[in-house]
Structures are given as structure tokens and as C-alpha cells.
Image 1 (cartoon, rainbow, N blue to C red):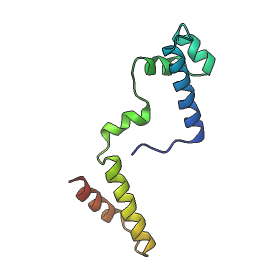
Image 2 (image 1 turned 45 degrees about the vertical axis):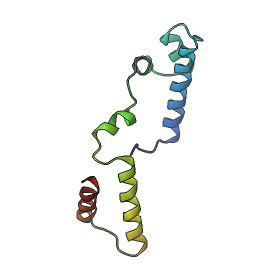
Image 3 (image 1 turned 90 degrees about the vertical axis):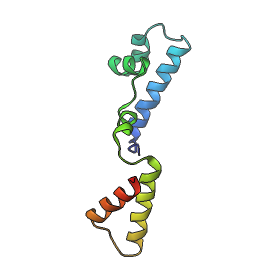
Length: 101
């Protein structure tokens, strides 16, 4: 599951997308101009322009559980907690292994 973004990260990501849209529509003649106009680091925009994934998107490949599996685990833990049975770490780990299989 992709980590929740803070407000600053969401604004930064939106700025990157606006800059990329401007480059695609040829509003900016260079990556440097787009980065400067949107207040983004040049290296970040260059990487995204060349197709590099964001950090959050890049970590998805290394996760053991898919988004749906992770949501099922969270729902199971939440249900246990609501019923007065806070699960131990070892129990959560076992459940995650079962879901992963």
C-alpha cells in the first residue's frame, strides 16, 4: 500500500504533474524552465521527465502484500481491536503470511 501523503507531499506531487503537463504541451521549452516556474528541484523533474517513478511508487515493487491484501489485514486487525482483542505482533505477522500465501 502506498504511504499516505502529507499535505506538503501532495502539493509537491501536484506541482510536479503541472510541470510535466507544461513540458508535454510545450508550454516550457526546457526542463529547467518548468522546474524554476514550479519551484521544483531540477534533478527531481529531470528524473520524472525521463520516466523515473516517485519514491512511493518505487517502493510498491518491494512490498510483500498487495494493496488489497494489506487492506484485508488492516480490516482484520481493526475488527479484532473493536471486539476487544488487540492482536500481538506475532499474530499479525502470521496472518500476513497466510494472506500472502
